[in-house]
Image 1: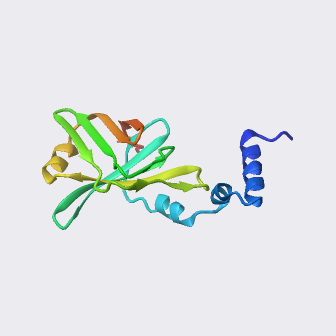
Image 2 (image 1 turned 135 degrees about the vertical axis):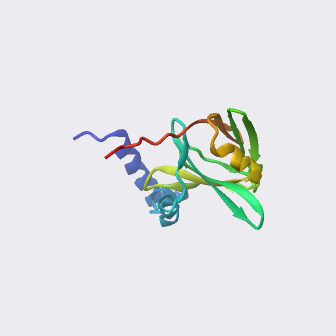
Image 3 (image 1 turned 90 degrees about the vertical axis):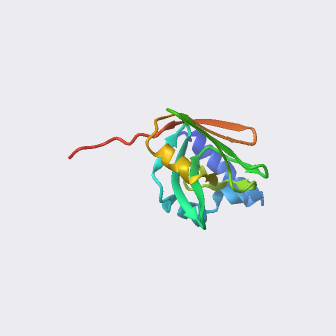
Length: 159
């Protein structure tokens, strides 16, 4: 039976790992930490792109408000310059900055995806403004990456 490209790539990765290639070893290592992050995402999907899902939820800590996000998919970043999130729609145009400038994605070889946690500073009044607005643009920018998301709308299945 002929091998698929994925099977061949996995075989090559195993061979490289056997010869001590650190990156190959990391890919083969079952990463319980990143899998736990995926499994413990509390927030609902907020937006989707072609190859990413943006989970988001609001939180307050010591009087400061945050939009906590987790990007799961092909988005991979390692930067000391933070990220920006633009939320634009009916009567709203917010440009949010990440609360930390150092960001790094975690790779999960089990799911073959990257997981990136980013918290954005937000004002309490902006949270209320966002809750009932139809968003027409959701754009995440970091380093040289610019991802356009579409607002996620869950399928309502009636029973």
